[in-house]
Image (cartoon, rainbow, N blue to C red; front, side):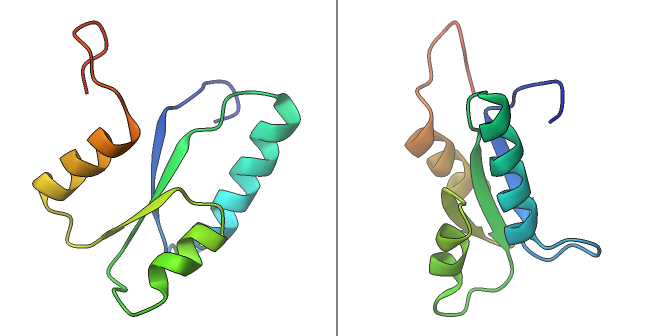
Length: 90
């Protein structure tokens, strides 16, 4: 992230040293300071409880995928956020 731009980050919500919301906030701040384009951040979590999606969005993430991730759901998410062309396929 320090030297390369990314279009998409699939962010796990529960990691050992830093959770997904904290990591997302740090990424957003770092990229804002540098003036670079913000990547889409999609939360990935097995926590499908009510309010989980809203918590992800409140943390600065763009969207939410429940685990286990199904290919059709991931493809739909990519189509939602990105335009696919022949010169830039998904």
